[in-house]
Image 1 (cartoon, protein in one colour):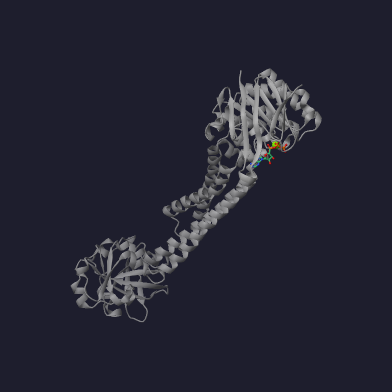
Image 2: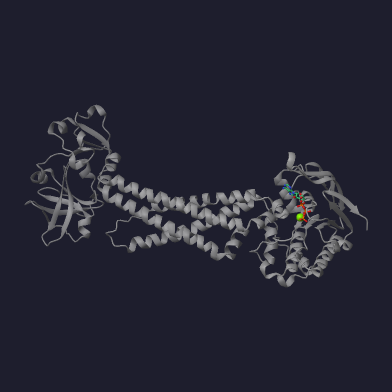
Length: 348
Length: 224
Ligand SMILES: Nc1ncnc2c1ncn2[C@@H]1O[C@H](COP(=O)(O)OP(=O)(O)OP(=O)(O)O)[C@@H](O)[C@H]1O
Ligand SMILES: [Mg+2]
C-alpha cells in the first residue's frame, strides 16, 4: 500500500482532519454507549444477578413490580421452587445522618436468589431484621453493623453484608427477610421469580408470566431511556458515515485526473480501490484508538455518581461499528475511481 | 524488433443523428527505432488515435496489433497489464503522482511490477536525461520541462516497447519543446523504441523519422 501511505504522509493536514473527526464522533459514541450501559445497569443490575428466567406477576400490573399483588391462593398454586419477592421502596437513614433512597426486597433465605447472592464483605445473613445491602451503601459511607432506620416506621435494619451490582430502578437494594418487611407492607407477595420458564398450564388465572427480559423492558422509564440512547447512537453512526463519505469524495474528485493517468499508465482499478479502502481503514483505526483511550480516561476521571460503563463489549462494538462505517463511506469514492475513464482525462 | 500496426481502423462515436466518425479507415505502421510524429489540427482525431493505440479505447472497426497480436479484443484487465508492461504514456500534464518525489515515482513502478528498485537502471536513465539532482524533489518543485523529462524517464523505466506521447510539449516554449523532442528521438534511436508523438505543432516535423497527418479523421503519410 505504498501509494496510500505516501499520500497520507504527504497530505498530513487533510488526513489528520478526517482522523480528528472520526475520533470526535467515536469518542462521543463511546461515552454515549457507556452511559446507556451504565444507566441500564442501574435499572436492572440486581435482576441480572438473580440469574432467573421468568417472573409471575398480577395480570393487571402491566409488568410493574410495585403494582403487582398476588393473593395467597395464587402464590400457593404456583410451583414452590420459585422465589417470592416482596418489595417496598423507602428512604433509609443511618444513625449518624447518612440518607439513601432504597428498594427493600424481602425473600426467603432458602430461595435460589438468596443462595446466588454474592457478598463483597460481611456475611450473608438476613435473620432478625438483618439486611444484606447493595455495596452502593458502602461507597456512601455505611458500615457493617450500622443500622438503617426506615422512614415513617420504627423498623431498624442491621447491615450484615454488602452485595455487588444490587440496584433496581436506579436505587440500591436492601435484601431482608419476609418477617422483617411484614411491618411495612403486611408481607404481601408482589411477584414470584423462577429459575426456569413455567409451562403456561401452571400459571393461575389472574396472574401473568413474563420473561425476565420483558420484565426489565417494562421497568419504569427503562425502555424510553434506552430508546433515546439508541436513537442518538444510531444517528451518530449515520453522521460519521456521511462525514467520511463527503471527505473522501472531495479528496477523490480532486485527484481524478491523476487517477485517470495512473490507469493509463497501467495501474489497475483494483489497486486504486484497495488503496482508498486501506486509507479509510487506517484513519478509522487511529481515530477509534484515540477515542477509546480518551474514553477510558474520561470514565476514570468522572465522579462515580456518573453511571458510565465502558466495558470490552462496548469498545469492540463501537470500534467495529466505526470501522465498518468508514469502509462504507469509501464506497462512493470507490465508485468514482472505478468509473474514471483514462481516455476522458487524456482526451481532456 | 517490435511493431505497431493499425489495420483499417475506424472509430465512430455516438449513433444515429449524433453519429461522428472520428477516425476513418486508418492504416498505420511503426517499427522499433523510429520517432513518429502525428500532426493535425484540433479536433482532427489525434488523441483518439493515440488512445486506441494504447488500448484505452477500442476501435469500432479494424484491428490494432502489437508484435502481430491483436490488442483490441483483450479484456480490460489484460489491456491494463499490457499498458503497465509494454506501453509508456507521456501526456500533457498529470503524468507524475503529486505526492511522490521523483525517486518515489520510480519506486512506485517497482512496487506495481513487483520488482526491486533497479537503482542502477534508474540512475542511468536519470543521468542520461540530466535529472539526477532532482531525485528528492516533488513534482510541484519542478519546472515544466523538468516534469516532462521525468515523465519520459518514468515511461521508459518499465522498458516498454513503445511510448505514446500526447502533446508532451504543449506546456513548453519552442526551445524546450525542441529539446524534449530531440530527447525522444535519441531514445527511439539508441534504445530501439517506437515513440509516437501527437502534436499540432508543425515546427517539430523535421525531427521525426516519419510524419503522419490527420485531418477530419483521415490519415495520410507526409513525404519528407
Ligand atoms: N467520447 C466522444 N464522444 C463523441 N465524440 C468524441 C468523443 N471523443 C472525441 N470525440 C470527437 O472526436 C473528434 C476527435 O477528437 P480528438 O480528441 O481525437 O481530437 P484531437 O485531434 O486530439 O484534438 P486536440 O488537438 O484539440 O486535442 C473531435 O471532434 C471530438 O469532438
Ligand atoms: Mg487531443
